[in-house]
Image (cartoon, rainbow, N blue to C red; front, top):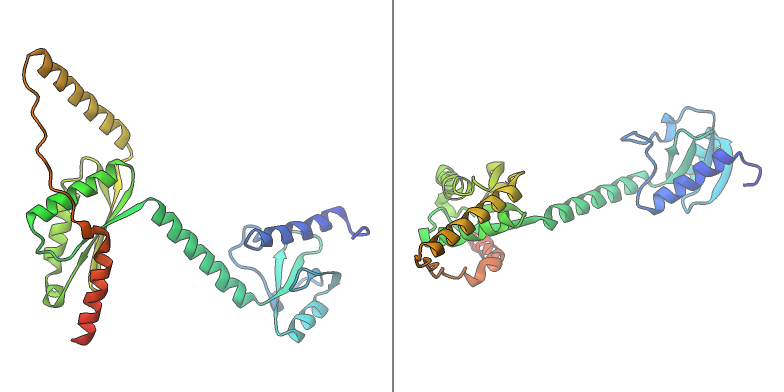
Length: 255
């Protein structure tokens, strides 16, 4: 590589480094040019394992790729000449899509909590417990996905499920959360996404200040501070409802 122009050597190194980091250099393009779409007369060719073949005619590079039953992919179009690599482009696209999907899942899961409701016939005590848990998630800065299940004939009453999500969760939490995704039904599930308000921190700080001022005023007046009523504990199977869902799937299949 000593006889190659410095900028061309750097283009090859940059292309290889970019791939090692998990993707090819795209140079602002969403798709790579490949095979017959590469119209320039010469390219700097890399092999499937990163071997450097140097500058060759595009026709020879394409013939070599075809001989290996692979694709010729332009990975650095701005280099002089452009850098191309022999690879299985279909496999590359599949891996890239999988990486993006996994990254998206991790991003969503990192700040996303979920509350599941087994039916729109949920009792008020259960609503209160789940609503308190939902408020706790929102106030600690998490996004929230509220999922409602529909069983058998309940599928014909999606409006009742939507009413529960909106009236029992979205509206009571409107002081700290906004609806990021309106209730949407997909199969046996209806989901609604809530996100903390942009000014949530200042809202909570103002609320805490007001409560502290009320407490001080009550103490100064010699009034007894009201004791907080003991709240029922959340159901222990809150995180195990997926298992219940799987059991329901099994019941449905048997039916």
